[in-house]
Length: 485
Image: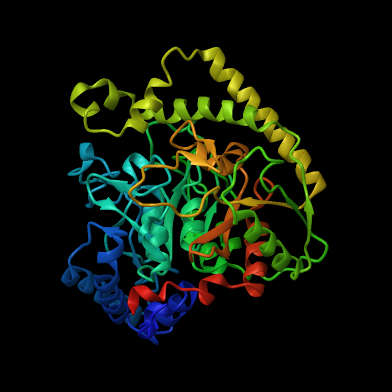
């Protein structure tokens, strides 16, 4: 690796350290914005992680307003004066929300999503958007509006998705912390591919919307990404909390996530699922990195044990397909049925919508019964162990010119998301999951491991990730320094 130029001290700070520095006026919001914009100008052209960038003059003016508020004794919250680039799937008032689609490339949003409302209220300054796959489909960030996002460790490889722009920007120090969303691994996979942390919270922890449908869509949730578990937890404290517009959102006080994460983990049991007894094909090297990470985790006082899932993997996949077709196909059916917009959308979306053809209400009900059976199984699993662990992905970051991996270890992948099957069980269970970095293969490409807690055990999962980071901090040990050399 070439010798790297020193990183700007402001940009190098963790998000929680940066927030403290701003609040205590050791650094001004304007200085923070200047440092980040200069770094983005240097790094982003090679990555294409942040898109729809706003003008520097306007952003510096907003940063100056945040400084004036601090001078008057008004601190808005943890994100005060911090640059953010909300994922280009979530609504931001006055900005284009393209969803990576030519259909919506000029759509200026008139309202904020709930999480953006909260980020804005906490003092964030929105500098642009983080790039996504078209409609967030597939774990590889490319689209016809903004192009492809490269991996910070090898720009010819994918950054994952759908929160690929957010993960790449975080790893490259272009954002201090980020928001993302996850249906089929969209917070976990890009975190693994970019050597950062990505958390899918418990079902209902972060209220989605506002949305025209508020009861059925229970599988896609927004969540935080960061370079430390502490940053992830603090971002969750901003995003989480009940909202009456999301009737299934949880009522727990989100302030719990702003508390210290130190905890005694002595004797806690971590069930290692590996490749599910050979059911999940894995690229060579992934399991080895995770096993080594389990050894590091045991240094915290935990005990890792091999665990066999008492539920057939193919049974899970069948119910997943029904739920996926129902949620995605139902939302975007009108685009596919309209000949003018159908020709603008990617094949994966057409496939999801066509999966609804012939589906009966009875089949949907049976799939929800199956999901319920899986949930009951997961509850029994957590009677045996305190946490579960499984790889975050089944392949290392692949060639960015490829739409999706067609085979793993010689086994063909029959859908655009089959290669991400390792994440789907925990989406279906509604469990809190965080992807933690576990190291790199011989080619220098990152990987991650999912740490899974029981339903609503978000704080316990964050504490486990924090304890692991104290033993092995891959983010600090292996930054993508070549980007700013």
